[in-house]
Length: 293
View 1 (spheres, rainbow, N blue to C red):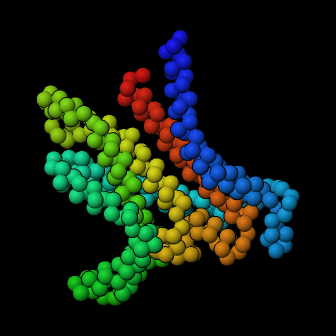
View 2 (view 1 turned 30 degrees about the horizontal axis):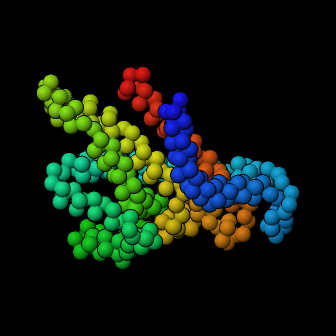
View 3 (view 1 turned 120 degrees about the vertical axis):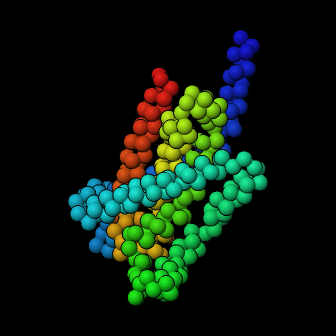
C-alpha cells in the first residue's frame, strides 16, 4: 500500500512538471488553431471583411476550384520529392558521422552539420540566388569553361525551389538518422560478418532495417517543413509558383481574404497530416514486423 501511494505521488509530480508545457502549447498552439478554424467558416462581405455568419463557402471555394486543388497537389508532390532527395543524401552523411572513430572528427562534423541551422533561412535563400542567377557563380563558371554560350535561367522554377529546400533542410534529416544509426549495437554487425556476410549485405540486412525509424522520422520532418515553408519558394521560385504556402501568403498580405486563407491553411494541414499518418502507420507495421510481435 505504501508503494502504491508512493507511485501515485510520483505520477502527480510528473504531471506537475508537464503542466508548463501543456499551458504553453494550449495558449500558443491549440487556441490559435481553434481561432483559425473558426475564421475559416466565416462568410465575407463584398469587401472581403469577415462576417458573423458561418457556412462552408470558403471550403466550397477551395475544393471547387481546379486551381486550388492543383496547387495543393503540387505542394504535396514538391514536399515529397524534397523529402526523398534529402533523406537519400542524409543517409550517407549520417553514416559517416556515426562511424567516425575519433571524437574530434565527430565533433567537427556535428559543428559543420548544425552551422546551417544557425543561419537565417532568408540568408540561405539569398545565397542560392547569388549562385543560380544568370550573372551568378554557376553561370559564370560554366561560361569560363566554355560549357555554355549564354547564361542559363536556373531561378524562378520549382527545380530551384527543390534544390534550395534540400540544402536548407538537410540537417533536419541527418540528425534523426544519426541518432537511429548510433543506437544500433555494433555487436549485431560483427555477428553478421562473423557468420559470412560481407559489409554490403550486413548493411542491407542489419543496419538499414534497424535505421528505418530514423529514416522515416527524418522524412517526416523534412516533408512537413517543405510543405509549409513560403520564404524559400517566394525568394527562389517567385510568387507565381503553384505552391499553397505562397497562395496563402497572397490571400493574407495582398488580397486580405482571411477566411479563405484560413480554409487554405487547413487544406494544407489536412494534406500534411494525411501523409504523416500513412507514414506513421507504415512505421508501426515495420516495427511490429521487426520485433516479431
